Length: 322
Image 1 (cartoon, one colour):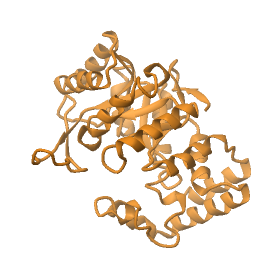
Image 2 (spheres, rainbow, N blue to C red):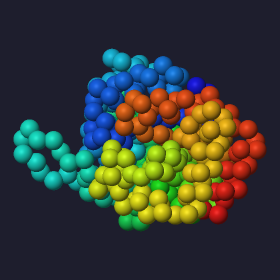
Image 3 (cartoon, one colour):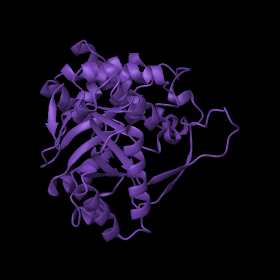
Image 4 (tube, helix red, strand yellow):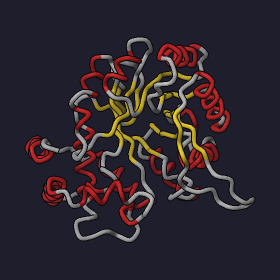
């Protein structure tokens, strides 16, 4: 898998990253292990985790896999801090709920506490990329910047980034702290990052790490003939964010264009959608999650797809008004 530098830094990552937000909720430990092995064998390096994923279950699963299945040195570990999950009490021996209430707290105390906990759980002395995962208006900007700088000087963090920041928020923090990456939603159905986030990131020397490049699965084309029973649109906890877009005429036009392009290239709409995001200006990598091995196999197949210019231009046109 091709490796890219992130922004104007020396950090090199695979241009497809493995997201673990489904681990411990929709993806069990055995499947997670198979995913990590397949990802590493394909040359993937960038792996994302967070104490907020699955109420902490995803991070614990990853910890159990590091070293035994995949060497820590082979991976670029990315983790976040600043979002605090609150799980209700459950009887002993019961599984915690998949969804937790999240509050934002980017105070020095919470950021460093979550960093130390992540390092301890993962059994490593540093993170390659550490991200502030939400804007916190209650915490002074200088405190957040100072915390990032301290984490880098102490050797526990190699590079710092942000996630879920608007362009002005990114610019405010990047003016006082070394920001290497910006994680933002980016897909053929979500191109708002091009208006301000991508230019701001480029100006400050940061690379874009795209999230939701498949728009919650819509761009795979699997919803063209209805809602599959095992899909996110059929899951009451996630259905609302998807179903409203399934009836959007413009989204339908994009999916139809993807299917046409995929047929002409003898590949999948998923691969075409990922290749389009991968090749956008400023994008260093993208995080893609997979519930099972079948989904991950399709994701990894996108690595070798090179979109002809005419097809990329056609997709630009049909999605430009979204």
